[in-house]
Length: 401
Image 1 (cartoon, rainbow, N blue to C red):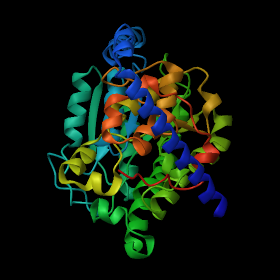
Image 2: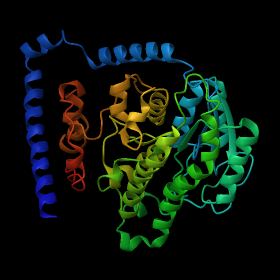
Image 3: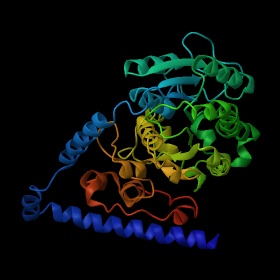
């Protein structure tokens, strides 16, 4: 524990030193001579326009990459799951969308979750948008804590499609109590937090994958032309590596990553890829609601300038799924922002958010105050990434404004 503490102290000093250097740079930029010279350099908007142009070009070239693919995205009425489903649909896929929020029915039995923050979105709305984007959206009311409902879901896909090409395990249940309960100590939470997070968020991933496997094995015999092989995508986070929120959350995400790793041992001989995806800070409907009611600043405090859209993770999954060499990633965890650099895709706004382990994310989030963040453009900060073993040493330093 002492070495962990010392390591984070060193990082804190690094952040503080970098903040001083950045302050010096800002003062230099404000001098008349430097301001005149730097006016000739590309601005943020120039980079945004270039990134957007590249993104549009890439989108045009790679459109319909998942044409005729049959996909299942669990927990897709809102948030990251919805963003993933929309990107799959945009590439021409048939996407089964599950969730417990439906416009045509009351919530699925035993689907209790946090109700302290109301969030918009239903499975029907997601499915409709998928169809508008050029795919085929099919909403299915399903509580992934109920194995029988999951089995009925897979039986329906078998009857209607005969196979399953892409499974995205995204369903996650935030326990009652909201952000405050999520950030409390484990001895204060009670077992319901552990059970909630692990029932839908870990166990549900295993159950869905196990029940879907017969259909995914059939996909090998009749897979779409543009899909190299069937793929299972697990939505996890940096919380599987470094302390985030609470004990139950970290154990759950670490379990998801281990599922991908160990399933790959058994699925590699079958020619099926399985990858765990790590989004960064995502600007979901729940994030926006937390900002509005003050919970974000109180319990999280990270600025959202470098936040990702829910669709960003979807772009990553599309890119890996369509990659003929994706078996080189099977059994691993992949950072969404770093996949964007590898495959060359941008977020919905044309920008490319930095990886959470990049100084380009860490300095604005933990070392810069609001004024410095406004003056120092991202391109001025080195995109140096901390090794994963450093990230695994504990929680990041506390931000002090």
